[in-house]
Amino acid sequence: MQLGLKGKSAIVTGGSRGIGKAIAQSLAAEGCRLLVCARGEEALMETVNELRSSGADAHGLTVDITDLGAAKQLADKATELFGGVDVLVASAGGNRRGQFADSTDQDWDDILELNLKAHLRSAREVIPSMKASGSGSIVFISSIFGREAGGAGLSIYNTTKSALISAAKIMAIELGKDGIRVNSVAPGSIRFPGGSWDKRCISDPEGMATFISENIPLGRFGTAEEVADVVTFLSSERASWVSGACITVDGVQSRSLI
Ligand SMILES: NC(=O)c1ccc[n+]([C@@H]2O[C@H](COP(=O)([O-])OP(=O)(O)OC[C@H]3O[C@@H](n4cnc5c(N)ncnc54)[C@H](OP(=O)(O)O)[C@@H]3O)[C@@H](O)[C@H]2O)c1
Image 1 (cartoon, helix red, strand yellow):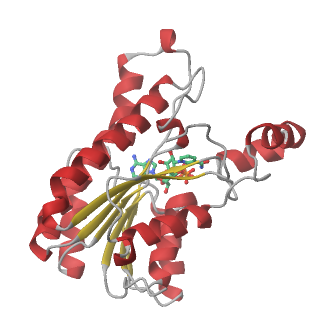
Image 2 (image 1 turned 45 degrees about the vertical axis):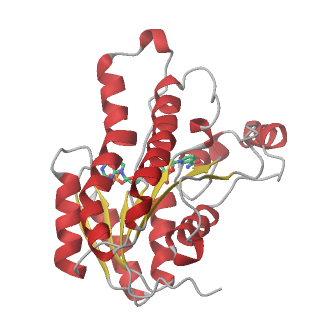
């Protein structure tokens, strides 16, 4: 399948490691020109250099996407480098576990900024360029816990990830006439070196084996590359009739019927 991504310009937020990095690598392998962002400069530049050594036109911008000006900075940089933005993948995200009764306004504000509002701002900043070219793809990385209850301790994460799916759907309705598709992707438990599931597997291998047998019918953790493949397809013109969708990538981990 020819994805038609060669020469397209893409922004990947949270692209220095894990799922975001795999997405950047996958888009680069299809010929996209890339602007990748994260807060930590060392890991970001390592990723950018890896992308460049595989032949990609890749660039890094060290920003905290929760800073109010960061989204504009990203869009401006991509426009300066590539003349516009064809693809936005908003992957940066995080969690703050805890009982709802103990959570503070600050906890909610911090994770709402990181998991939701930063992505909305990033999308808003790239929409004019996509409108001007008459096409574009925006993908938000949500979670299966945006589609169904993740359980105790996850009220903030669950809420922000659900909101992201909801926003993507309405954006897709509004932006369809401009040729802009907006989708979300809901990964299940994804293991990669140094990631949270990897650390848990190393510290508690038996517990994690039980977790897999009880929760993941396909019998293993997912890989970042398996999420990246789906995101790359969604970002391509081969997904031209896919918009407003939330696609699970979870080895049947989630229980939701929709
Ligand atoms: N891993 C899983 O099992 C899983 C499952 C479902 C959903 N997800 C979602 O998938 C996405 C990626 O997850 P992951 O596990 O790959 O995460 P990760 O390993 O923690 O990587 C997060 C990336 O985002 C960057 N980042 C974090 N905060 C940022 C900020 N404020 N500004 C700019 N960049 C920031 C990080 O770099 P810096 O720290 O240097 O900024 C890093 O590049 C997240 O949205 C997560 O919720 C993950």
